[in-house]
Length: 403
Image (cartoon, rainbow, N blue to C red; front, top):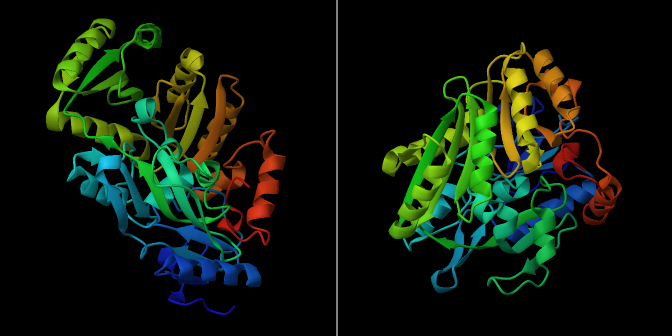
């Protein structure tokens, strides 16, 4: 193959599920990135887009990777419009660096990642979210504009830089969560939130799932506005509910008192201990080796989901940890050997209480035994048509993505 500019041969450190790419390039501008994709399309080179590589193992095992295009040099904060509560950022900027810059003006992008070094582009490509999803939604919900490098070399914009400008907005929603299969995100504009002046988290522990479900429903049926509302299952801490309130000091105290009356025996946590609590919770499913699975369910199915998790804790698949939103999404960590993990995934997919069951991190034998994305949904035909329209040569993400 001919070598794109600013490139080098791939090494073992660049491997994706053991497959070493032939070439790695790090474009310095959006235009250079677009030209690189046009070259790859003409030469039909299976191509993977990479930020900091925190989620590079997500997806199917590629047959081959000719080119990795890294956004590491596209790492700037383009504009922070303090008065409008919006910001435009390049795809290679780290999420933690972005929020550090925004915090200097009392603002934030209210999303979390289990990986501190994740980039904005990687966050959008996977639509990764954490506990703040309960109040603020996923990255897709906060995106107001995007600039893309298309597979044919064009640079296109959609949306805008102010919240009320929604021209072309759906294109940004389309590429968010597409796992780099449609186009390369080079810039993104977000709506921001002011940093809360006070925060408190109530932690309630339970001996059985029935009591947890009863209290959770009581909170959900109330008029209280929680910032985060999560469930945690682990060998270390058992069954817990975490409810965060973050607002003005007076509103936080009042709502924390009301939540405390509904979550029986809850203990309040504030300050540095509260930050540590949520950091550990967000990272819990990724701690140690093993298989990590993303689940979704209807809120009404919570009792069945907890029963399934409890059954897995008694199965021969090693330690089981779950961290999830009580609105119906979460991560499950399965220990044990790959065969046990693959059987557990198959069992989860057979459970009618669960919606999507997607394998995010797994050893090669697990990926060989089960499709990481699961059975094809009814929308698969439409997704393939979009893929052909955006990427006619079929090069992007080297066959690793959902389409």
